[in-house]
Length: 103
Length: 258
Image (cartoon, rainbow over all chains, first blue to last red; front, side, top):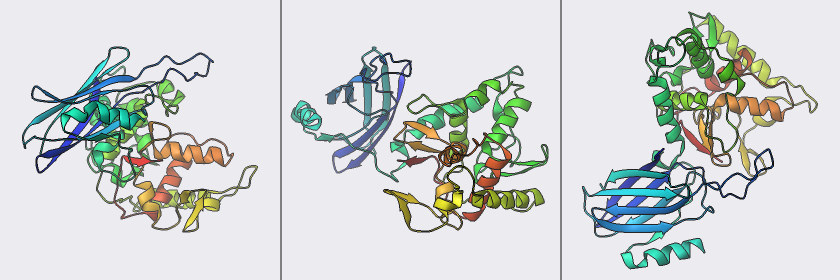
């Protein structure tokens, strides 16, 4: 099941402030459930942002990032109307994607 | 250390980045509750139950199918059931009467565990409440049953019981008080409005959307009282008391809380 990313990109000069909120349980794999067995790790490992064919942000995450993570970053050299796409891949190979028009 | 690593990876890309911790009162997008709102909208529109119909014909008080603004005037008196119902009671009523569903499954677990994926009820309440976001709390007090509910709610609010001889008023009848660092709102006056209007809310300590019904149930647990049941007369009466005290406040649902 593809996950959802809520995305907003607001332009200030030629720099866009991007905020992306991902829906993900971000299980570390270190917790134990009520039955005493470990809860399997399930967390985002890779987050990528692209504008056109340009990769503007590429991050590698561990299970140490919170549930439903929010990431914010600035992207330079963009203009109004550009589309930014943020996507993630998790350790189970599941993906999520969201896009926004910079304004 | 994580931020450093993060910044190093992107240094060549002419940009800076940071992991931003959400704070209170940020705009809509930063609140994971909006994922639940999306879920709730889908659930609302999806046919379910033996009758295979959606909840779109559900009358939340403003006519069948009207969701926008409905949350702002709940709980209220409903003629068809001859009782005052809150949002959760009304949704249960619609599931039973319109969709023809047996409510055993829903009632077995109306609220999710901390860190859980969220329940159908939580999603539906989040959706309905979000459709009144920005409106004023306007819980009616026109019908005698609504006035009676307020009086019952007031009685329950001040009713001391349980092994600790606690009432709601023990913690929530004075202004500018805290327990540890948590503000304790005075719910006997208009301070109640912003509190009531910000539920349902995403609780970051639990990672799930919580509803007012859950909040009251959890309060009764902390008081060591008999557990309040979802959509019950007592729950609804307390909600009427809180909502009417806070009438006129802006609804900021879904909220974002500790």
